[in-house]
Amino acid sequence: MGSPKLPPPGVRWTGGTRGFLHVLDQTALPGRVKWRTCRNPRAVIEAIRSLRVRGAPLIGIAAAYGMILAARDCRTQKEFERAGARLAAARPTAVNLAWAIKRMLGLGTLNPRALLVEAMRIHAEDRSSCTRIGRYALLLLKDPVLTHCNAGSLATGGAGTALSGIYEALSRKRKIWVFATETRPLLQGARLTAWELSRAGVDVTLLVDGAAAGLIASGRVRSVIVGADRIAANGDVANKVGTYGLALAARAHRIPFFVAAPISTFDPATATGKGIRIEQRDAKEVLAPFGRRLAARGVGAWNPAFDVTPAGLVTAIITEAGVVKRPSAAGIRRLLRRAAK
Ligand code: MRU
Image (cartoon, rainbow, N blue to C red; front, side, top):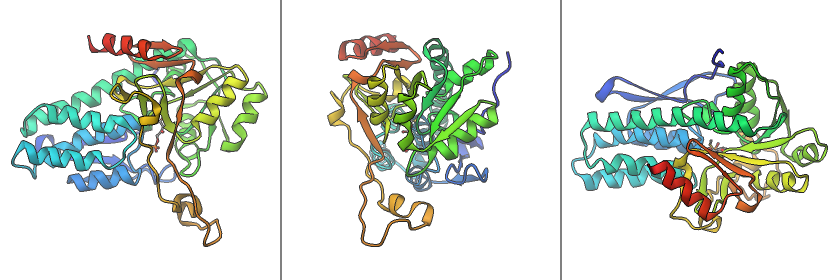
């Protein structure tokens, strides 16, 4: 059983305690594999905001390393906390960002070695969570699969969340056919998912977002799997805008709708999806994507980066600590208790 060919890691730290963070610039993909070096927390914030580094788990990992850079400018824990708050504000929806920063602050030290060890631990834990999610996902997925946005290797420290089951299948010499939505407006599906799957040898078919409901209705996909940016205590799921529509279509046509995410994506402090802050992004991304104006001048745009899928539409949430079928507040509490042991 060979391992699938995954893309280069989304982030790398080099140089030990005096080192720097290198991010794979995902805005340049698939055309160019380009690295950027972040030498201070401002550069990390810029990389996260501009989506050079993206995907909830990867943002958390980048922020953990970013806190090592931030600590260099701080003399007190209070200053370190303020730096953490600035980093956490880079993107509001993916809870992994605040989660990783809280873990780094929780060490209660500015010692670079202790901070580096913790950031590397967060990175390694995510890698192994992805592998475990993939094993559970493979037990549930029905081929062919539809996915949205990019919840693959590029979005995590490992083989991905939604895509890890596909890679797990590949490592067992099984092939699952993937339909990927292009994911307007920034085309994470077209630019990233299609790229990473095809270079790994997975058959991938791209479709425009508006074609997804029709594809599901046609019976040509047998399951939908997506990642998550934040999961509320009752199982409501915030994920890339367009996810809710896929869940509705999956329910209408009676195919399973799966969400794959690590425990770090759960937010037990937020009771329901209504409490999740949805990031609004620049209207330019819709009106003039990639710098090319499409809409007439004077036209406005509404550009939420995410939407919320109610727990009732989710067949199961797949995590490294197990699967919660028909998610509910009680089921999620049990999962989180098990994961904390
Ligand atoms: O705006 P992005 O590209 O950071 O959004 C990422 C997503 O919403 C992904 O779909 C994903 O499910 C969360 S990351 C595994």
